Length: 335
Ligand code: 5GP
Image (tube, rainbow, N blue to C red; front, side, top):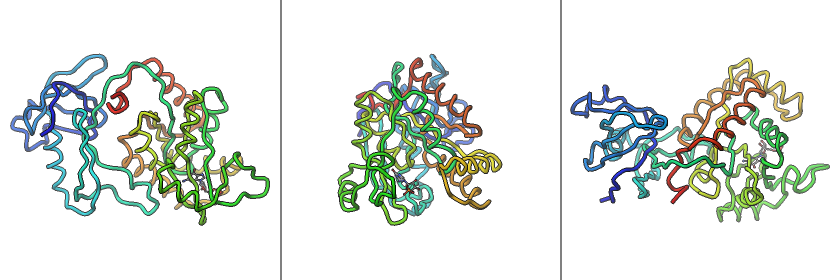
């Protein structure tokens, strides 16, 4: 029995079309919405149907019924059970965490998908314009996130900064501690990972690499927006904490031709030395679509990186808009 507040706002994390809902007693009273829409929940007295209005710009649309969290959960639970996962929900300020058996996203061996979880509604609140603390550039490898990050930092080093990752790999010739990496030993990294001091980490060629939470905190304390070209596995930690308040941009893979061009550019500028086949490029396109689907609830903006100048301009415009327009953010950023 959850405490029911009179009015709250929920961001919908699924599409809803009342005309296709066989459970709705009368189609006309249903309120259609799309993933990402913000709904004002006016009444939650009925366990199956909430009365809601869609937030449209500065106003509200007409009222209608939307499936309650409980109903939608039950409906989605008809999917054959396959995997155990922790299902977290939040209803008007009340967070519930429970274990369920259900098939989720396809699990990939690289762990990129492990922290994606199913959420149907997320409670949000309207905030006046404010600056986010971190900028997370996520997406598949090889679509230019690192180049974009460097360009942002070079464009305004007072405003943007980034962290130096840690690694257990021994330094190569001419590699200085604290420049590309902080060099440390595997044992200390493993201890810190176990003690949740890392935002994210990965293993490459038998060595550990990762981003320490304290490195991000330090940059935020220095008054900078911390730009991270991180794995999407980091998004859950960033999203769920007021410390990091991220703006998340998904840099999506462009078409095959542009993707080839990006790889050639990365090789000619020394950002990458990978030799890629047509199949590798196809895999990047597939990975891009799958990652975007799995993490869409965290993503504020998707940019298809077809040309760096344009992508850079879009990022700057989006960040400027945050400083002038109100924002709907998770309630846990406020309370
Ligand atoms: P290298 O040893 O050649 O500098 O890097 C090897 C790999 O480590 C690269 O593929 C790079 O993307 C990855 N890497 C570098 N820093 C990090 C990090 O902070 N986290 C993770 N997960 N991987 C990293």
